[in-house]
Image (cartoon, rainbow, N blue to C red; front, side):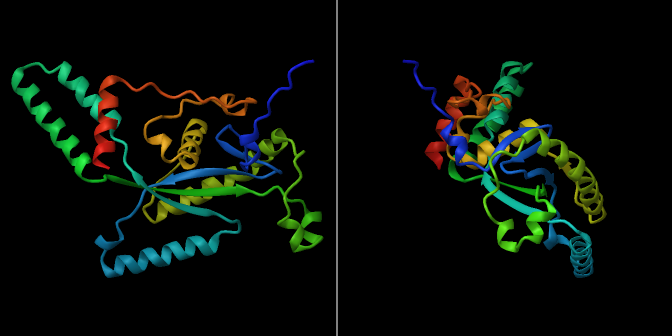
Length: 243
């Protein structure tokens, strides 16, 4: 008797069907693209500038004829790679004086991270494509919020979403630029990394995702992780002791 293949039960509990061509494809015909934006230090603006900023942002929101989602994330900053680069700089220091300065700087940064949580705040805007046809809308509001059918082709969704989302992205980025906020679109690997981090907040501190779009759609998901060198491992240990 042939051994029954195990199914990817983890994916059954996630709304994400695939991430491809810089688009998050959702189950049931939906999709979304994500922008990462800069921020404006509102407290440093004068009262007049603050009023202008509020008015401009309100005008932006009122001009939209499609929904958006704004996400603000505050997380512990991972400076492992930064400290790793400092370690590499020590190896190539041209003279003992410079080497000593690099060592002192490395100790300062390590002590700072051990005693305090260095936080990183990031801002995202998700722009969705909602795969709802007119019959769903006219048949009643309740039907819109029912769980969508599972047999919607992700390729059909992807192609429709790309056509639908592109002009929305351009419009939002242009309007944000008018109020001094820069926005960049997250690419496929950046989206994978973002959602890996969102779903695995503790694990992602020590294991960085090294996923392609095939690895997380296999029957049994066994994600690869970026290797941590000896120096990097010491940094993680120091951070954990300080946390």
